[in-house]
Length: 331
Image 1 (cartoon, rainbow, N blue to C red):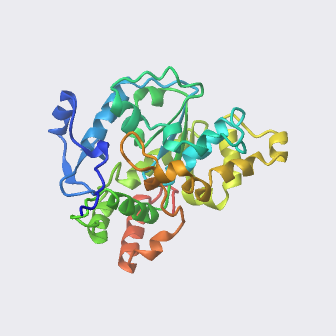
Image 2: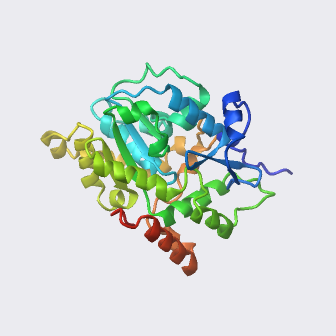
Image 3: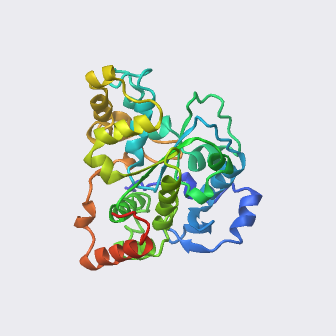
């Protein structure tokens, strides 16, 4: 009896590439990917991408026209993106959908469906998608480093909410996530092998330090338009940062909402326990073929302690100390 094996996500497959993308790929430096030695990462503008996903990046850079009212959630991969997507959707739509109502969209839709990615979703399916159906303020997400954002975003007054995480937890989450797509006859990724890649900056949208620093510096220069947040801060004081996000996005909680515990209601419906146990997140799939359940692992701070050796911790701490030195950003 054959055992079913996970299929590779569509964004990893190098098929149906445009001639423009093929021509660009031939000029870029490469490294083997994390899912298998057969997958390739390409370095574009200093960051690593899969080929097909890079096509989405090029289309997004060329065609996306930002509006001043747009809101973009930007994250380093595996930093709590799914959680903050749910929170931002609930926050911005709280007058349309009360977080306590039985038919709230989050109860029947994965957050990635309600708040689509730009480059690995919208602009991967269509070179120039029609975004006219998105109500204002439009809410999108992206993993793009600041240098690779469409020029229209950098020139606009749209709001950027940036979420990152302790690199040690990012690494473990990334390692576990990519293992879900490896074929069974290949086995799981060697922790040591991909740790070496991660430390060298070779990971999807990596190096992580350059990704973080790009937005960190922008948040210092332009705090009115860039809100920099860490997963650890959000986990430690979710109510405080939800209020701050509401203020930053121009939709502060009213005294009446505070009295009626709107903040707590949003955090409850968006909690890991609630979302991970919903049927849609246990059984559903995204159009890319990825199981919704793949986005819910543990949601804990400090899980790296169960996997990394003392030597690994010391190496990653040293890298962070050297790369972030003088920036004011610490983990």
